[in-house]
Structure formats: C-alpha cells, structure tokens
Image (tube, rainbow, N blue to C red):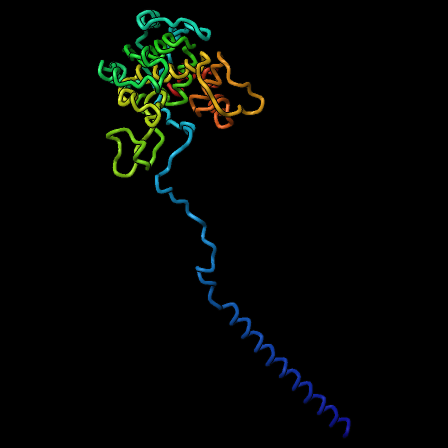
Length: 305
C-alpha cells in the first residue's frame, strides 16, 4: 500500500516535471518566435558609400588622359601603293619647305576618313596665322597648314615638313583620334578652359583635332586646330620637333631606367607631348601604344580602316 502510494507520489512528481518542461518549451518557443519576427535595423545604421563630387572649379587634369577614341566603321584596307619614302632627319637638320614636301607626298585616292573632307581642304587665313603666339611654339613662323589632300597625304606632308618618319605620325594619329579630325576630348566643367563658343551651359571639350591639341595651352591656335587638319597636325609636330632638336627643357626626373633629356629621342618627345614631362611614369603606356601601332602599321589593317 505504501509502495503504491509512493509510486503514485513519484508519478505525480514526474507529471509535474513534465508539465514544467512543457511550460518551459512553450515559453522558449514564444521567445524564439518573437526574436525571429523582430524588425531589421534601420537604414541609417548602414554605412553609406561616399559619392565623389566635382571641385568648385570643375574637373580638370594636370596632364592629358590616355585617349580612348571609338574606331569608326571599317571601310577597306589601305592600298599597298602608299609607301614610306621619308624618314627622320637628325636634330638640327635644315627642314624641307612645304612645296618640296607637297611634291614628295605619295598621292593616292585612298581616304579611310571621308568625314574629314571639309577640314582636309581648309587652310588658315592670313589673319589667323598672324594671331599665333610665338611664345607658344618655337616654330610658329614655319607653321602654315598650307596643304590639302586626303588624310594620309596630309600626315605624309606634315611628317616631311618636320623631318619625322611618317609612320610615327600615322601611328600617333591612330592613338589620338583614329584619324578622325572631328574627335574631341577632355570633357570639363571648368568654363575658363573652354574654347570660345563651345560651352553648352554645363561642360565643354578641351582637346581637338587629329592629334588632340589642347586649347588651354595653345589658345592662339584656335579655331584652326578644330577646323584645319593640316594646320592642327603640323602645329603639334612643330612642338615635337622643338623637343627632338634638344631645345626644350624639363624639370622632372625621368622614370628610373630612362635617360635624362637629350636631343634625338623621338619616343621621349612623344611622351612629352602626352604629359608635358620627360619620361614620366604616366606617359609610358602612351609611348608603348604609339610604338605598337607604328610596328603593326594599324592604318593598313581592315579592322580599323
């Protein structure tokens, strides 16, 4: 009897324990449910990514960014009859006249950029040439832009007039504009560096023409750098020839492994055109790109021309 009572008591204790466990389970489940349905953290607790804003005077660059022109629609391969007959003249050489160079141009009907036609057949006026600032280009007195023809004929004429291998001129024009005279670059919101008549109320372009002359640095060459293919191209090579002849000066130390400034280094001068310095690190890719097109003769391939 006592054993039965004891068993009954133990059974009641077990039932009580089970009831307590059941209550605890219910409480735990409710607590878990309450936690899982809680609201997410407010958005203001999340870290916002900073957004760059242009400076008050607008975006501008201390050196020209690497150009990224879009290749025009391919037309047809360059004819094999367009050959190179002129090469580099050593520093300090007497340069041929424009009439002599016109006679030496290899004439051809090949024109991969028919959209250049107007600019290719326009030359500066006497008054426009008179406005050129001699302080901006040592060879100002020799720059005329007095030649018309196809785009390739103009590049040959410029190369001859400034004693440069024409394939170097062709290659640089590929890098800068894919030979499209209407190419413009260097978009900026800084109105003070905009050529006259180009500000649209929000922005403008700074670089113009086949070889992307910068208005900010060569203001007296506007609007010819935009309107006259031969003028713009030979203005650039007047500057490059000044460097090649050893008559430029640079204040920077060249990138390690590259020589100090000296006459006769056309690739150093090519980098100087891009950056305004002598073999700086930011010009090495530009030099390599021009060399690549020079080696590959890109203007003879169907892909781009």
